[in-house]
Length: 132
Image (cartoon, rainbow, N blue to C red; front, side, top):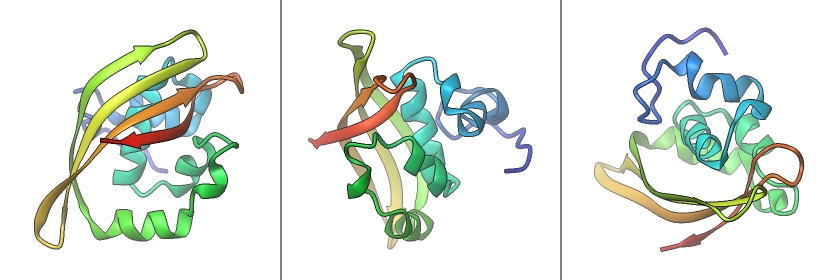
C-alpha cells in the first residue's frame, strides 16, 4: 500500500492515512468495532483482500473466500458507507448497523447489515451478520 493523502472513503472526512489507513497497516489500532467496520468497508473499496481476511474472526473465517470477494468487490463501484447505529454490548462485543451503497451492472444497490464484532483476540474482528 502506498501513501494515500485522499479523503478516506469511509465517510469520516479524515485523510485515509490518519483514518482507515492506519488500521489497514495495524489492525490493533482500531479503537472500537465501528472503526474496524469503516476499515473493512474501505478494504472493499480498495480491494484489500488480505485485510478483510485477517479482520474476520477465526470462528467464521472459513466462510470467507478472498478470491470470490475480491472478484466481486472489483466488479462494482463503491459509493458510500452509511452507519445507522453502533452499540457496544460490553468491552468485547459490539454491533454495527450499516448500509454500504454501490453500483452493480448500472444499478444502485446496497448491503443492509447488522454486523457483530468481537475483541476476544485482543483486537476487534468481524464475526458475522444478520441481513436486514
